[in-house]
Amino acid sequence: MKVLVTGGAGFIGSHTVVDLIENGITPIIVDDFRNSEKFVLKQLEKLCGTKIVSYNIDCCNYEQMEAIFSSEKPDGVIHFAADKSVNESVENPLKYYQNNIGSLVTLLRLIEKHPVKSFVFSSSCTVYGNPDSVPVTELSPIKKAFSPYGFSKQVCEQCLVDFHNSNPKNSIILLRYFNPIGAHPSSLIGELPIGVPNNLIPFITQTAAGVREKVVVFGASYNTNDGTCVRDYIHVCDLAKSHVLALNYALKNPNNIDTFNVGTGKGDSVLEVIKSFEKINSLTLNYEIGPKRAGDAPVVYADNSYIKKKLNWSPKYSLEDALLHSWNWQQTL
Ligand code: WQD
View 1 (cartoon, rainbow, N blue to C red):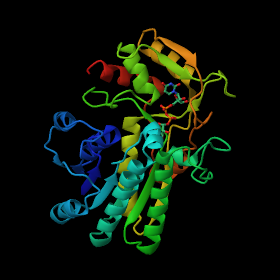
View 2 (view 1 turned 60 degrees about the vertical axis):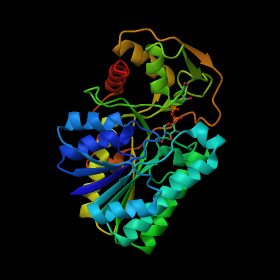
View 3 (view 1 turned 90 degrees about the vertical axis):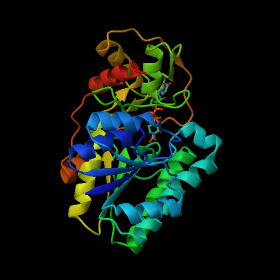
View 4 (view 1 turned 30 degrees about the horizontal axis):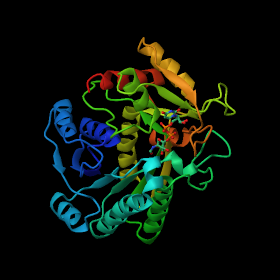
């Protein structure tokens, strides 16, 4: 089976490429390297022991993408390529609407002409906004998005539903990621945030490495055990596995559309993450409590019973594994 992987040189995309190859699926990477590094391709070939076909193309470019569909004739698509900074999306919403929604619409127009057996879309728990209750299930209400980034994911999900209703030939799976963290155990690939990281784990690892002076905990007066926000941190390799299972599920269930939460089902607070990071890596982290960050939901974690039941997926790595792997990766940079 040949699968087009847009954003395949990115954090989750690159780890999914490894899993695809390990499962005998041929990935075709499409990445314009706006949010990823070209050396990742070499690392992937070293890690997988095989050449990997890749195209340096903006997947919003219909003509260039059509040429790839015509020549490669993919059986499936996994669409990761998107901008994903919450903060940046507030400053530059049109970039997010243009790229995140535009790239998806371009791909849907292409699979209308060149049908594929399975289309897997990278969505996010951010579509739930600040949930009324936790754990969050796939039927939890979609609340008003906190950011243009979150709204772009909500719009993309609606595009997929409407497209499928009009054109059920392609089987579509939406995966709502919770908080992807960690790195490949080999330390050959991992997260490569550009500039100052928005997300907690890369900020922690960069602080431990002396790249940043300290971690500021965004608020400690939430209604949680220790006052800090709770999230569902999922190892990127566990997340990668869900894509291969989703592809195969779509193959076996043609003309279908389905949505799955991909999370551990467990919530950890910011302070718990910091303490775990210090313990598993035998170091002391410089951090302090600061003001709340606008838009942060106090508690978000997944009910993952549906993906367990339908895709037979379950997380294998612990929070400690992810924090160890992310620190090992940071030390190679
Ligand atoms: C986690 C917790 C912060 C940094 C975002 C996107 C989501 C997904 C994952 C793409 C929060 C706290 C953080 C710091 C801190 N991305 N924090 N100090 O906001 O849950 O989710 O990334 O799909 O869509 O919304 O992740 O890592 O930014 O924050 O205290 O320096 O860590 O307040 O409680 P978040 P995060």
